[in-house]
Length: 205
Image (cartoon, rainbow, N blue to C red):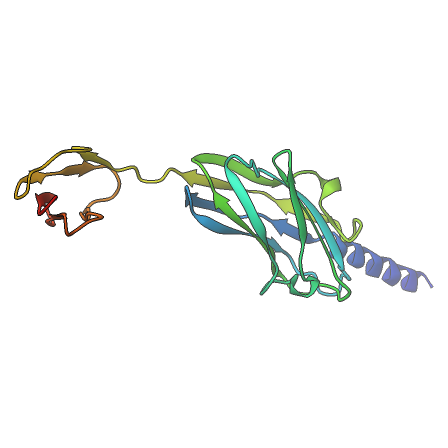
């Protein structure tokens, strides 16, 4: 009888250990102003844990720096859930999803599509244990936070910034900033054309 009790206790402990071992992670990313990126939320193995819903509150989504465009489930573990609802509030992204078939496997749970608006650095994190849940709290997840670094766009300066030329005149332009070599062109090549070295020639008025 004592042996059966010990075996039962070991089974219960193993079951509890399995339920508490799901790790949720946010990535460490970098990008440039104006770029659209995908932020993948990943999970440990959910097989056999009967996870049919989740809700998350993710920190670090300042709307002045990041514009959330949507949540992608296609090709992820949450594909069977269809769409995931979301809203941005107080620099936090609140999401919720549910389905009738339990989630299984490990990997990308879903992706957040976002546009990077301005140069900044922010941590990406799971706000609190109580606002980031699988089902209604079980299995209890652990969390690994990430961060996002947004670099400024390359800024190119051109000299001279404006000029007036007579037909047949030429003027050499120079540029700095960004990533050379530079490509020179005009919006009206029938009026003026650039050489590869930045030399502008006026053709007609």
